[in-house]
Length: 261
Image (cartoon, rainbow, N blue to C red; front, side, top):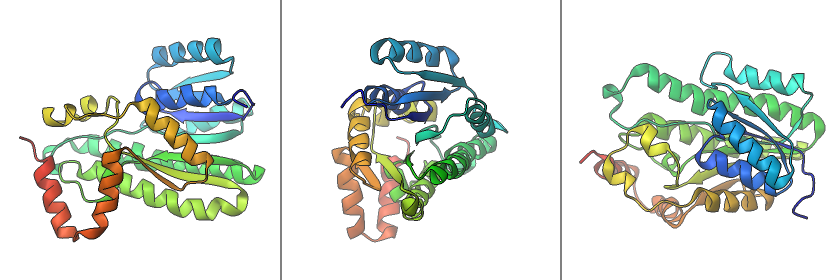
């Protein structure tokens, strides 16, 4: 049943892109929501829309998960309101295009903090809640960039490699607790990623997969018990073909493809 009550889903980075699409699809599937991001106005607008269209309870938490104590703010909110998530979607994250030594160091540190540290903290703490209740699931939004070294997206790609590996291992560990863990590894998808990452023009002209389509397929895969979901023809071809080539060739070709023109 489409409107069956499935409990609470926590979605980080919900103000745009994949996070926004996750919130909409999950509400349609019968989840109440806690949507989290920095931009309160966007969150409130989304919450009002979902309450009106789907009749779901939608909590709004405007906080910066990069900031010191940001993840604790989210965890404190859950404790204060006595909320036990049925699903956590770790979607918040960002990238920065360019050679490592040419980028601002603190931006790179913040990237690691959000993409890796925050996702790990929330997976750990909310995962413990789920384990105690013997139910729940976690979707970590990774990327196909995590499947190979990515010159000019070096730190971003490394954070996503961590997130995919972390998710695959945690999926095995959480199985006895009846908790599912999945890594979503999309290819080029409609979002604000390229604008925020200051990507070269050639990457912004690529054909992008609609976020709603990516999320619909991801949630179908999660419900089917998948542990890793790559999305989009380009992503699936890339993930499949990488196994046939030596790593030196892969990283050199990636460097040529990603180098600014």
